[in-house]
Image (cartoon, rainbow, N blue to C red; front, side, top):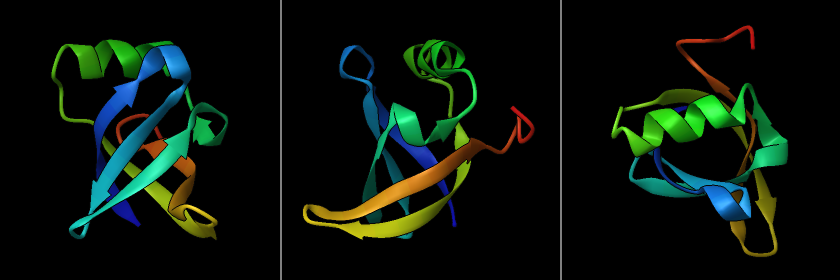
Length: 74
C-alpha cells in the first residue's frame, strides 16, 4: 500500500501514515530505514511517501514493513 507519514511522536518511537482516507499506526520497529532521517524530514515538514503492509491488531489496522519510497533500499 502507498501513503504519507502524517506525523511522528519521535520520543515514543511511533507515528501515523495516511492512506486512502485511513490512518495507520506504525512503530519504529516496523520501519525499514534510518529513523533519525525520517524524524528530521518530518520536522522540516517534508512530505514523506512510504509503502507498507497492513495487519489487524487489537487497536485497529497497523502498518508493517514501512519503507520510504525515496530510499527503498534502506
